[in-house]
Amino acid sequence: MKWHKLGKIFDPTAHTLPNGCEQFAQSPQTLVFDDFVRIYFSTRARDNNGKFLSHIAFVDFAPNLQDILRVSEQTVIPLGELGCFDEHGIFPMNVLRHDGKVYGYTCGWNRRVSVSVDTAIGLAVSDDDGLTFQRLGKGPVLSASAHEPCLVGDGFVKVINGIFHMWYIFGTGWKCYAPDAAPDRTYKIGHAISHNGIDWQKEEAKQIIPDKLGIAESQALPTVIGIAGCYHMFFCYRESFDFRNNTSRGYRIGHAWSDDLKHWERDDENPQLITNDGDWDSAMQCYPHVFEFQGKVYLLYNGNEFGRYGFGLAVLEQ
Image (tube, rainbow, N blue to C red; front, top):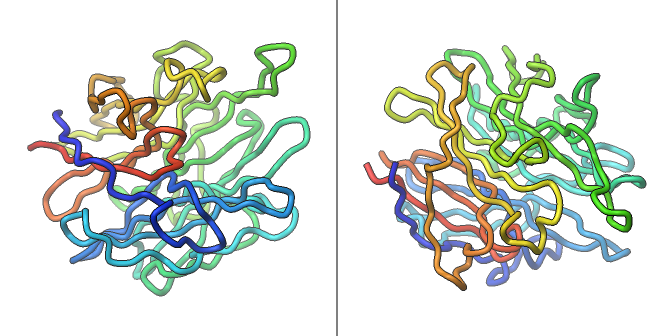
């Protein structure tokens, strides 16, 4: 695989975003139309206490994936109600077309006391081509369980031969790595299946992608695509602590492939997105999303500071 970088294509600070959001365009996820591509992303505002709230917005791109046609003027789904799993934000939201509707699998998060956050996966449905979404219910469709005790999220859903497949992350636990440090989390990529997109059966606590950095490797945001008769998963991975300011321990993009959706061979040589010092993605590459449009395969991803200043694009050279 050889990828050609097309540069950063969206900077949230250059646009007026809904809900008073000013920065961050994290985890870009596509809904493809015939003549344009809608890219959903998670952006941030602050509440009355100065803490972040994550909202979902979108930007529509012309077929050249460079010219912006429209930026949403309102969030596409409100945050959850008091005490619900998505009370404090949605990050990310993965969308797909099904049965004449658009399904949106949300990663809702809520603040905790002893640790910073917990997450679960919800489902919302759109009847207006993805302009707005309505929750299926107030609770999640996939969440913590006996052997996955925390941090279930980052769901990516694909229908293959009539079966819904979801690749997601699950937390293995929290740990304080220094006496005066806040707890940090570790999570791995898992898999679940469904016959209706609502009721899911997990491969309980089964880590499907092997670690490269050791047991303290955190893996996030899987995305899967079929290329040349094989399935390819892209994701991001990092050390579980000292990753925010130490670029050698921060997020980078990983890759694995499978010919049966059961056994995955890790191959981080693909993609290799070369950077130069000072580039928008030189210190970090994270939150990948792969999609097809007009006969080409593209990779969206965030750069430095977890996508504070937007996302960029690469194209697979055939």
